[in-house]
Every structure is written in structure tokens, then in C-alpha cells.
Amino acid sequence: MTEPALLPRILVTNDDGIHAPGLKVLERIARHLAREVWVCAPEVEQSGAGHSLTLRRPLRLRTLAKRRFAVDGTPTDCVLLAIKVAMRGKPPTLVLSGVNRGANLGEDVTYSGTIAAAMEATLLGVPAVALSLEATSGQDPDWHCPEHLAPALLRRLLAVGWPDSVLLNVNFPNRRPAEVTGVAVTRQGRRKLGEQIEGRIDTRGEHYYWIGPVRAEEGDPAGTDLEAIREGKVSITPLHLDLTHPATAARLASALS
Ligand code: MN
Image 1: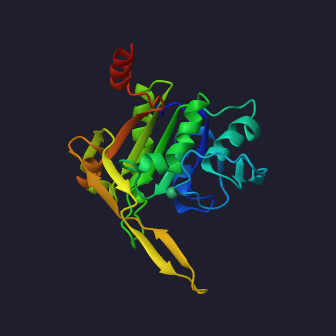
Image 2 (image 1 turned 90 degrees about the horizontal axis):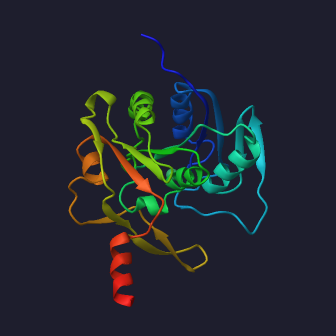
Image 3 (image 1 turned 90 degrees about the vertical axis):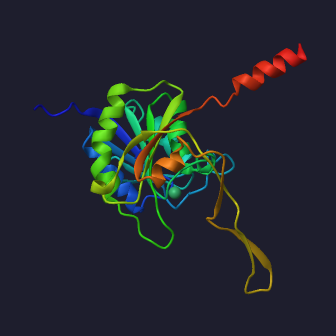
């Protein structure tokens, strides 16, 4: 059997920061798929940064090694500076974001810096996949699952392809690769962060608040990313960057005409 053709260039980024274990896992995954692997990731963790862009202060693009950079900004800043500056004239064929420590399911996708990096790449015309690994609190996730399953899965997804305004949100269950029960193409479920807000008092007697990880799940989970991960499957959700809701647009247009 001949080896599958390698892509010219993959850009790897994340929101957990340049030192995150999941970034190293994703670099190894990318090396199976491309001749050149470029890395550009935030200097410090940016989980929950969403699709934010740094506009009110300058950004530093720090060169760490050949094809390896850190930015003192958000995941969106990283993708923008990587493609427009560091990789200028040598655009990536694919952007991979992750592997995030913790799943990005349901409404997590609207807060996630991991997803936002893939959004930014998509907006710049580069196909992108966000990868996340389910993590139970207080427990170190088992990185073997994405490491072993992602290369073949990404090859299959690339062979099928997806439209320009779409990115893929891939979540891995926190179990051994052999214990994964399948791959499911899913829709985005409903699970909202912000259920747990702890009010405490600091060392100077002032109040502070800390948003905890507890989420409220609602709606029918059938066919969702949430259900797939609960069943031990790898979840693949195609996300569309056009947030327009056509049914409501049609209803408003006819009501207002
Ligand atoms: Mn993160």
C-alpha cells in the first residue's frame, strides 16, 4: 500500500497556550499529515476567549524555533498573525486547533478559543478543524485517544471535504482508543455554562466571583455532540459561520412587508 500524500503545510494552534500538552499531541498528529508543521499559539492560556481580537494594544509575535511562534494575544490573533505575517506567501493548507483540554460541546462553541481559531482560519479561506478531548474535573485526560485516532480520521474528512464557510468541531471521549464505540456526525446540543458562580471574599475583605464548570443541559439530546460523547463516540459537528436563521428571516420579511 502506498503512503497517503502529505499536505504541504499545516498550521497548529490552540487556546490552552504554547506549553499545553494537547498542543504537542496535535503537532504529532499534524506530522502524519503534512510535510511542514507550523505552530503559532498564545503565550498563556486563553480558554473562554471566544473569537476576540486584540485591538487596543500592540501584539508581539515571538519566534521560538523554526516554524514555531507564540503571540501575547488570543487564538484569533495567533491565526491572523501566523497566516498574514509568519507564513506570508506560504499559506497553510489546513489549520488544526487544539487538542483542547476539555470538550467543546453545545454552547461551549460560542465561548471557545479553540473553535474561534478554526473560525478565523475559515474566514481567511483556509479549511480548519477544531479538536477537543473530554476531561473530567480533577482528572488528567488520556491523550492517547486523539493521538491514535485523529490522523486517519482527519485523512478521511479531508478526502470528503467541506464548504468554505464551514469548520469541523471534533470531540474525543476520554477513554482508551480501543474503548471508543464509533464516530458520529452530530448537531450542536444545548448545554450552557454559568450555572455555578461562586461568590467569595478575598484577602482584603473584598467580594469576588468565580465562574465554575457546572453547565445546564436542556432540550432533546438525540443526535447531538453531547449524546455522542456520553456514548463514548468521537463527535464531528460541522459548524456554519453564517449565523443567519433563514426561517426567522423569512417570517420577519413577510410580517414587515
Ligand atoms: Mn482551552
